[in-house]
Amino acid sequence: MFKDKRVIVTGGAGALGQAVVEYYETRGARVAIVDYNEEILDGAFPQRSATNLYISGDLTDRASCQAAVASVVDAFGGVDILCNIAGGFMMGEPVHETSDKTWDFLFNLNTRSVMNMASAVVPQMLSQKGGKIVNIAARAATAGAANMGTYTASKAAVMRLTESMALELREHNINVNCILPGTIDTPRNRQDMPRSDHSKWVPTPDIARVIGFLTSDDAIAVHGAGVPVDGLS
Image 1 (cartoon, rainbow, N blue to C red):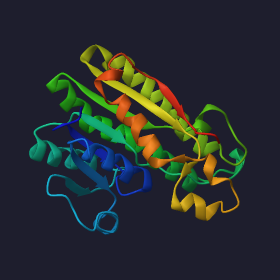
Image 2 (cartoon, one colour):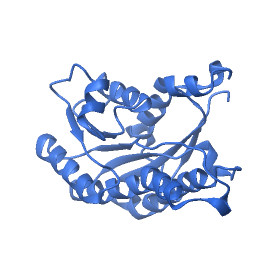
Image 3 (cartoon, one colour):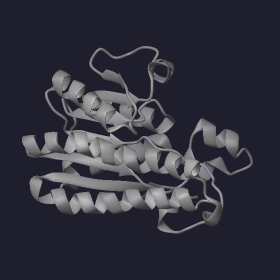
Image 4 (cartoon, rainbow, N blue to C red):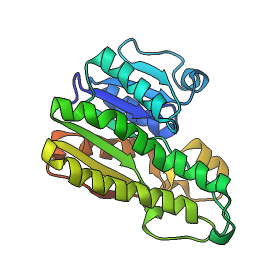
């Protein structure tokens, strides 16, 4: 299904990113993995595939994203699928005490990164008359929560951007959707929440398969969806 498809995975060195990379690799795609620096990439991929690209870049910087995508286009000839996996979570202050540091960190990481990659990838997809984009929002984006206002707002913004892009691009054979994960079963989450029932969390390969569906021809009629992927949590 994905043989020779050209895929970009941002945040590809993270737990979910690695599962998404593996999903496409095992199905014959060529994958460009983008993450913050070479050290992170080396730690996640000590043995690099000759058919993939490994690109370090700052997703909060538009010029860095433009350069990363240009290198993918040079190597692969285009981009068929963009998976905006990069993002992060942190608790914050009450809204009335929210610092510029908290606001900027979460909106840059979760929202600006999506905007920057869109600015670099969408023109390429328009020129080739098609493509698939999946963003990562969160179940928490559907409602506010105490001391999580900035996080929930940044992920809600991802949902609104997804819907807007879908309406802008659907007539151009470009599908844009997002997923809304609950708690993801990662080593970091297990470390941070050791007393939780981990069996109810969502394994990363399960999320990767949902992303795969949304970027497949089976989802050709799906535009602007926010798909809950929250397991039993």
